[in-house]
Length: 302
Image: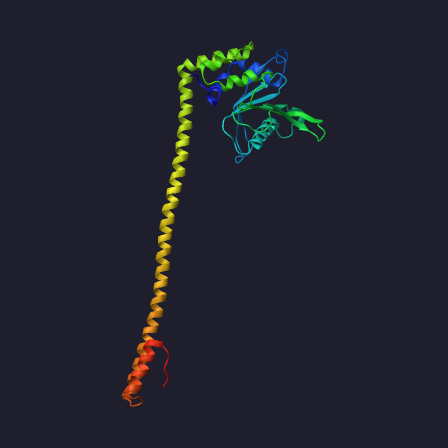
């Protein structure tokens, strides 16, 4: 087994190698090597002007000798609104160096290269290039350019980036052996990956990255399970509380109703007894009316 190049830590370490970075950029952008006189890594943190502004953190950021900035990123999992996120980072990179009062000529071309471990589109094309164009295909400007390389798609075997895709998809030493290429950059990337697979400092870094991912997944699962359990517990408590409140209310209402009915009957019986004592009713009339009060609940008048 080898370390997977589809790891942020491994990928960043690979592109620290100038040869790997140079040939990768040359192959993806289809730039002749002689046109790339210099290629230097930059700080991957994009500064923010305001405290509440979103901070930009790039995977790999490099600059060509003509000041063209190149952002290389690897996205392993499907990211919601990935297209908007990519535009955000590229636009932020484009405007990051222009200060108040400076001329727009200071703005330089920015290129985003995205390695996606998922299919962004249903098209067979696995290396797509996007620029700003009109409805007829006429280019408006090349200052913003996005290269999308979809690692999961079927390769045609005829593209210059095919062996790079095979390299990033490699999982074992056998996969590396299957990459038959004369590309110096890919050969150097394979040597670097083999070296890192045996190097203890990089292994510690990689394992730390994997541990962090496992801990994040475990924490997310814990929070989700705790949320579900808490929701159930709160639901039960609320249900019991509502049940008690409703039960008390219903009990009070029933008690009042029963109390009123019982009190009314007792009042009617007392009235009949008084009428009997006063000689206003005979015993037969008293018994008959008393039965009427207890069974029918009809009110009596004097």
